[in-house]
Length: 330
Image 1: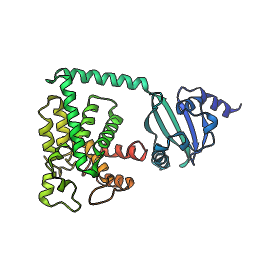
Image 2: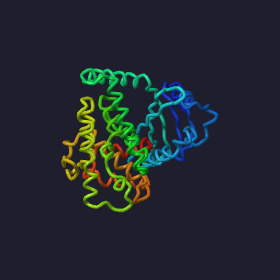
Image 3: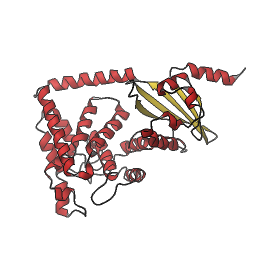
C-alpha cells in the first residue's frame, strides 16, 4: 500500500487549500484548491519558495510570519486575506511542523470565509441600524458630520507633516486587533471611527508645538495632554458618537493607572481605549517625528512587550505582538 499516494489523495480532495513547505519555505505539496485560491497553477509554485504565492507588497510580512513559525513556542496562527480580484475573503492558518522538537516545515490551510463574514457584517449592520434609529440626527446629517470631522483630521495632518496617514493607520490596526478577538461586532465601527478621530483634539494646537524639533516644555506637554478632553468636547454632544468620544478620552490612560486624563487603571479603562493605546503608540514610534527618525518595527514591538502590564493591557498587548510577528499587523 502506497501510503504517500493515499495521503496526497486525501489532501487533494479537501475543500480547504493546503500548501506544505520544508524548513526553508520551499513548497513540496499544494492541492488544487490552494492553487485556485492563489490564482497560480501548481506547476508555477511547486518547488519554489512560498513567498512567490504572495504579492510583492506583502512579502516582508510573510517573511516575518515564516520566521515566527520557527520559534520553539509558536503554535498555529491565522491571517485574513482578501482577494481583490474576486472579492472573496480567506482565512489562512499557518501551522509549524515539528518532530522531536525540530522544525521541519510548515502547513498553510486556506478556508473561504466569505459567506460567514457576510453574515457577521449583516448582523453587525442590523445592530448598528437599530442603534442609529434612536439617534436624534438623521442619517444624512450624521454622514455630513462624520465627513466634516474627517476633513478636520486631514487639516490636522496637513499641519503636522510628520503624522500624515497616522490616524488612518491607527484606525486600521485597531480594527484588525479588535476583530481578531471578537470578529465583526457593534464595537467595530466605534473603534474604526475612534482611530480616525483620536487626535482631533490637537486641531487647535499651535504648529510650533506640534512640529517642535526639541523636547517639549512642561507647559507645552500640558497643552498636548488636553487633546483627549478637547476631542470629547467636540464629539460628545453628538448622541451617536458618545461612546466614540469616551474611547478617545481614555486612549492615553495607562494600565497601571499612571496615564491621563483620569488616571484610570486596568479593566476600568474602556476596552477599545486599551486597544487604541497599543496601536497608537506603535505607529507613533514607527513614524518620523521632528525630533527623531522612525523606529524600526521590531524595536517598537520590543518596547510594547517591555511595557505590558504597566503601560499596556497585557492580554491585548500579547495579541498585538502575535499579529505583528505573524505579519498580520504593523
